[in-house]
Image 1: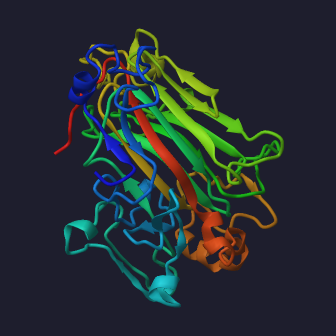
Image 2: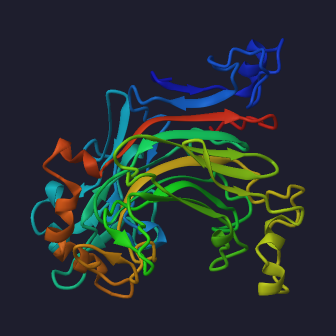
Length: 393
């Protein structure tokens, strides 16, 4: 393994700590809680180097169904480590491909070798072409990394120390998706969002509540099929205290996931706790009434936490914009309005033509443009007492 990365399976835990109950989180007090594996730690990256065996880059322009304005690529301009910090940084695609590329160019991400093959074909994710008039290609280049082929786990604690991007229309996320979609396509197999935020500094709803970089959310997505997604029942929101925001210093984001409930924390303060009850998430979501005579995809699971009873993997990314509603048309941005509409057929063009308004908020000429980057100090995962290792080939 590369320096700074630890992935230890249960056999090693038991072999080294057989005299004490040290194979789960939280561990027996007799264990040395500062040393893996006796503290239950099964995964750690402190980013002393960029371990590309652990973190696979997603390569796609599909926008995740939200028609976001970035494409993801494996490029050290957009993802790199320095002095023990991981940086995921959005940049202008024209810095790479030349002036006028967003209006006239072609985005071709098909690739030709294992490390640069397109990973997301949906929504024209592997190839797009501009027409020079209304149809612009994704004008932003960014990074999204995942552990789907290296690490997954069921139940435990995830802790991430991160400083979030500052800059209009930047959308950072640290989250988890199933390794194998054990209950079918999204959202039937679930999604766990440790954090999402927006980089805007002056972004307010109709009540004057700030929803920008001083605001974050933790959310679970789940439902029998799209568009039935009851995320609104499993979401918690937090504002930074005392006029601060989440882009000025590192904060600790935690999810504690067990066979009975899931809890999210920000700097040790509870954001939201979710317990679906003995009827499980199907009853909790009210689906028997909403969509009667529809199959419950989780009914054959003995676990009330289904679909959150299977291996999930880690994802970290920085998106920009999109038309899926995360930057809703009804929200007020200052000192200029949102430059595109979610219903527009030319949203990437509209966004790009407003570059002189939003790009200065990214501070591209200061600190290597890293105000617009998500900074990650470390990622740690501990197993709980029911952890069963499932190494991924």
